[in-house]
Amino acid sequence: MQREYMSRVTKKTFILTTILTPIGFVIFWIALIFIMSSGVEDKKMALLDPDNLLQIEQMGMLRDDNVTYKYPKTTLEQLKQNFEEEGYDGIVYIPSQNFDSLTLNLNSHFYGNSDIGLNTQSSIKSAINQRARKIKMQAFNVDEATLDKLKTKIELTTNNLQKKDDKGISEARIGVASVLGGIMAFLIYIVIFIYGNMVMRSVMEEKTNRIVEVIISSVKPFQLMLGKIVGVGAVGLTQFAIWAIVFPLLYLGVAAMFSSELQALQEATNVSSAADNGMMDKIQLVISEMMTFNYSYILSLFLVYFLLGYVLYASLFAAVGAAMGDDWGEGQSLTLIVAIPVMVAFYIGIAVVQNPSSSLATWSSIVPLFSPIVMPARLVFEPPMWEVVTSVVVLFLTSIFFVWMSGRIYRIGILMYGKKVGLKEFATWMFRKN
Image 1 (tube, rainbow, N blue to C red):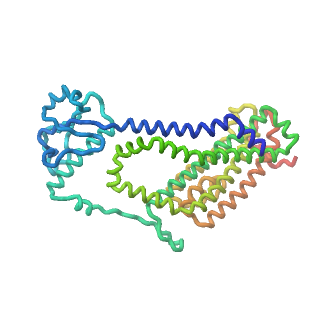
Image 2 (image 1 turned 90 degrees about the horizontal axis):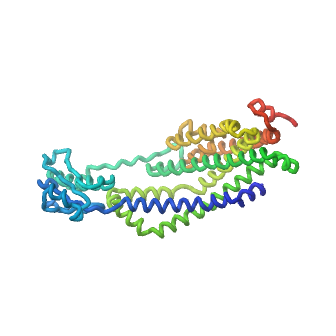
C-alpha cells in the first residue's frame, strides 16, 4: 500500500496533473470571461420608421441594454451611403406596411457592412416586439397589471403517503435533486474507470517487465493485489481532496480579479430584465432548496458507495490485468467484461434520476454491479431505508467476494506468460486449490 501510494504521489505526472488541472480550469475560466465579454458589445443603430409604425413620437424612444437607437431625419438611400461616418453600426428600417392591433407580423430590415451576431439580432427584435406589444395593449385598452392577472403560476407539490410527516416536495427541489444525483453518479463512474484502469495498467506493467517475479518472493499475491487497490485508491482520494480545496479558492480568486468584467457581463446580459421576469426569484428558490438537503447523510453514504464501488471494480480490473498476455491490444477485449456493467450502470443512473422510484431504480440499486452508481443518484430523493441498508450490505458482501475471486485469478495469472486466457481458464484459476 505504501509503495503504490508513494510511488505514484511522488511521480512528476501526478504532481503535474494535480497542479496543471486547476491551472487549466483557471485559464478556461479567464478565456471564457474574455470570450463572453468580447461577444457583448454596445451597438449604435440608426432607426428609420417613415410611417411611425412604432410610434416613436408618441411613446418615446426604444430602450435596450445592448443597442442604442438614434432617429436621423433622412432617407434610407442617403443613410446607406454615410451611416458609418455618422457613427452608426447599422440601420434598422421599418418599411411601410399594414400594421395594427390585429396584425401578427411586423417586417423590419437591417442594413450594415458586416453581419450582426445573434445577440444583437435578438436585442433588435426584442426592442421592436416590446414596442409592438405596447401599441396593441393601448389599442385594446389593456395595461400590464391586467395582463399579469391573466397569468396563472401552477405549483405542483409531490406528497408521499408512505412517509410520515411528509410536507411535500416542490418542483424546484425535484430539479435540484436530479442535478445533484446526476453529478454524484457521474463522479463515481469517472473514478471507477480512471483509477480502475490505473490498477490494471500497474499490474500489466509489472507482469510485462517481470518485476512481479521478484516482488512475489517477498509478499503474497493477494496482499500485493490488495495493496495496489488500496494504494491507488488513496492516490485518487488525495488528488480529489487537493482539488476540493484548490478549485473553490481559485474560483474565488478569478471572480475577484475579474469582478468588473463579470459585472459588466451581467449588465449586458439583461440581468435586471431577467429579475423582472422572475429569474432571480427562481435562482433564490433553487439556492434555498439546496440548503434543505441532509448533506451529512448523503455525503456519508456517497463515500460508502464510492469506496465499495471502487474496491469491487478495481479488484476486477486487477484480475483482468493479471490475466492479460503480452499483447496489450488483444488483451483490451477482456476489459469489456468489466467496462460493460459500469456503462450500463451509468445509463441506468440517468434513467433513475428521471424516475427515482421505478422498479428499475429499486432493483438496480440493490444489484451490486450497478448499485455503486445508481444508488448515489437516488440518495437525494430519500429512498426507503430498507433499500439503502440492503444495498449497502449486498454491495459490501459482494465486494469481499470479488476481492477473494480476483485474488484467486491474480495469484496464478500474474505469473502466466504467452498464453491466451479464456473464461474456462478464469473458472479453473478461481477454484484451483494450489
